[in-house]
Length: 588
Image (tube, rainbow, N blue to C red; front, side, top):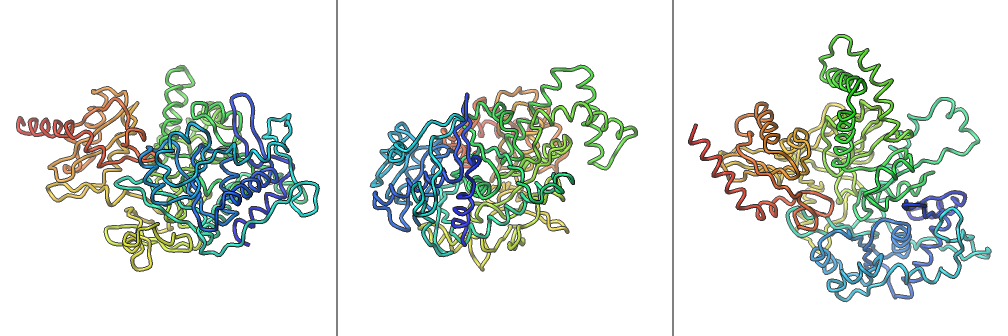
C-alpha cells in the first residue's frame, strides 16, 4: 500500500477520539478519523463535479485547519496535484506561482482571500470552502464538545452512513503536491513531490518519533502497554502546512496514535500551548530564540534568590558543556534543576518531550539552553527538493550544533566547496517547467543542495550556510555570513534580524533590525570582532528600526532573508556605512 492507502485505512479506525483540532479562543473544533475522511469524500465529489482530472493542479489558499487538511486529502485522493499557497505571501508572487502551475481550480478559505487573489487567478475557477462543504451541511449536527458537526460514517458499502471511497490508485511516480520554494534570490521554483517520495519519507519520520516516545515511556507504562491502548500523543502545530516540512509532519501525525491541534492565532501561542500540553511540536529557530529570551528576561525581572539560583545553575551548565567545570558546579546544577529549571520546564509544557526545529540552523547556545531545562531540541535538515528532510536528530544521541545523521536510505556527501550532495528515494524528480535548472541541480545523479556543511566521525551533520550567500571580499577572502549573523542575534537583545554585507567590498558591514540601542550594537560588535580574523571583522553597522517582512518583499514566505532585495532597498545606508568605515580607517 502507498502512504495514502495506509492513511485512509488508519483514519477509518480512529472513531473514538479526535485526530485534528483547531484551537479557538473559547473552544475547539474537532474531527475524528472517519469524520475527516467524510469531509475529504465530500470534497472529492465536488472536485469531480468541477471536472478536475488526474494530474491537474488544484491550488489551495488558506491558513491551517481541518478544512484545509480535508481538501488536501481530497485532491491527493482524486489523483490531482495540490498547489499549497501561503496566505501571507505577496500577491504578486502568488500570481507568478499561479501562472506557472496553471491550476484549474483555486480553493480559498474565505471571500476576502478570494477577492485579494482574483486578479492573479488567470483561468482558474475560484471556489470557497463553504461551497465545497455545503453539500454536507444538511447532515451535520451539534457537537457538545465543540466538534465540526460532521457525523462519523460507515466506510464500507451498505453501511448506515455514506461510503468513504479509498484513494484513487496511483503509481510511485505520480505527483501528489507541487510546493514552491521560498525564492530567496529569485522567482520561486515549483517542486513536484511524488507518491514514492512521500512513501520513503513517512516511515523515517515515524521511526524518529517512535524513538522519542519510547525513550520517555516508563518501565511501568511499557509493562502495562501489552493488551492496552497506547497513550494518545498530543501534538501542537502552528507552522503553515504549505511548507514541505510542516506538511510532512501533518501527514506523519495523521498516521499515528495522536491528536494534532492547529494554532489559529499566533498571538495566543503561549495560551494554546498551556491548553494543549503537547508531547512535541515543530518550530523555527526564531521562535525558540524568543522563548529563551523571554524566560531569561522574566527571571531577571523577578530577581531575588530564584534569579541567583538560575544564573548560578546556567553558568555551571555551560561551563560543564565547555569542559571547564568549577568546584561545586554539581551542587549548583542540582539546586537549579530541583527548583527553578523544573518550574520553567513545567510552565513550558509538563508533557513536553522534545522541541523539533528546522528551516535554518539553531544557535548552539539556544539548543543547550533548552537541554539544560531538560527539553531536548531535535534538529532537522532538508529542503523542499528532498521531501523536506535529509537528516533527523536521533533522540538518544543529540549533538548540539549539529542536525543529526542522514535518514535511512539517504546518501550524503560533500562536493566541491563543501557543498552537501544528496541522493535517495526522497529526491524530487525535477523542477516544474525548468529543465535546465533541473539538470544543474541533479548533475551526476546527486542533488546539489547549495548548502555548505561538514560531517563528524559519527555521521552527524552541521550546516555552515548557503553557497550563494558566501560573501567574497575584494581582497579575495570568502566569508560565510550566517555564523557572524548568528553571533549578532545572540549578542544584541531585541534584535529582530541581522544581515552581513560585503560582496566586492574591502570589508564587512552589518544591518540590524529592531528596537535596539546603538551602544548595545557597538558593544556586541566589539566583542564579536575580538574573536574573528581581521577579514571577518565588522567595520560599521546600520540600525533599521522596522524589521524586514514578507509583505515588504524583504523576507521569503518562510521567513528567510532576501539578501539581494535588502541590499537594493538599503543601498544608500550601505554606501553611508562604507563611507564612514573608510573615514575611520583614514583617521587611524
